[in-house]
Length: 59
Image (cartoon, rainbow, N blue to C red; front, side):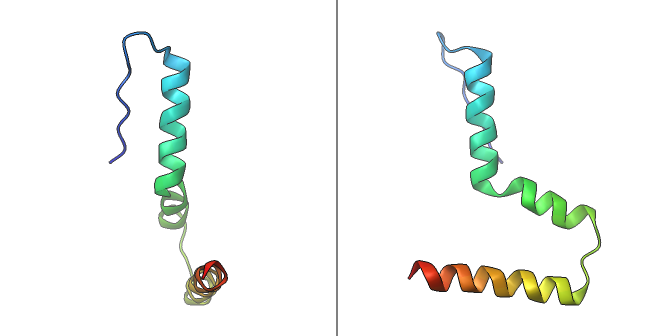
């Protein structure tokens, strides 16, 4: 679970920005999109292949 602690002199806007950044880093939105809609086995296979290719490129 993503948490952001707001400092004493920190504005709400900057805390919200930090929260959005943390959520995107954690990949929560991508998981929600995947869970909300049915994913066919072919789509699942293609998604895993794309992830696999990304990790290969980084090495």
